[in-house]
Image (cartoon, rainbow, N blue to C red; front, side, top):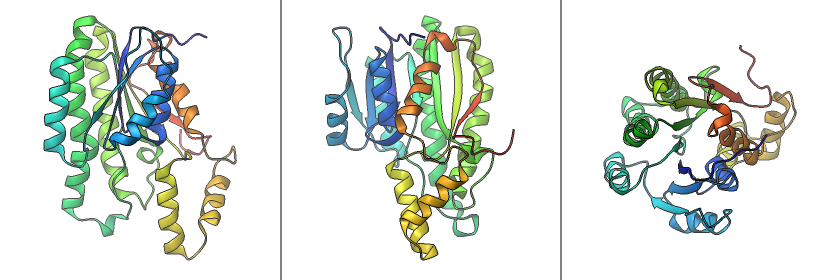
Length: 261
């Protein structure tokens, strides 16, 4: 199967590292022009230097702060005044870990701005040109915790569940314009985020990070943590014409970790 994205323009959030970076790399390999979006300009420059490039591709980056919604709105609105995208990958860093009893109402509001409002606002801006061209792909990086909540990620569980239900509603409304909306439910992947969470777990439990990782790997039927590039393969497929009839879905990528249907 040939994943051909030549002539397509993609905007990928959280793409300076981890899953976002892997997605950007695969979209570029498939022929898309990619705009990175993250906080670290230096890291994005490094990513761009390694992206596949042809005469028809033009990669760029956008410095944003997802933790400051008002400043983010200003930057992203300015971007869409002069640019349009065919493929939007909604992805941000995750909120702080912690259980439900550890979080305040203000914590939930901050996470709502980070994970939900930024996604909805960016999508609204991207949809204008997608509807005009009768083609578009909106792909949300979500989590398996929307199906099976992880008690140490109360903020993420709650707000990401809102994202996937919003995405399902949106998918129905925009399908007539050749636009698909899908959410990817992320399992355990070998990223900086997992390393940070494991470090906190290890400290709290009084064990080594290696022991935490080993226990995590044992939970997964494939007995390993996912590689970010494997995530990129799935997103590139969803962004292609080959996936035109896949719409309004929540697709787990977790090595079989989810036990629910």
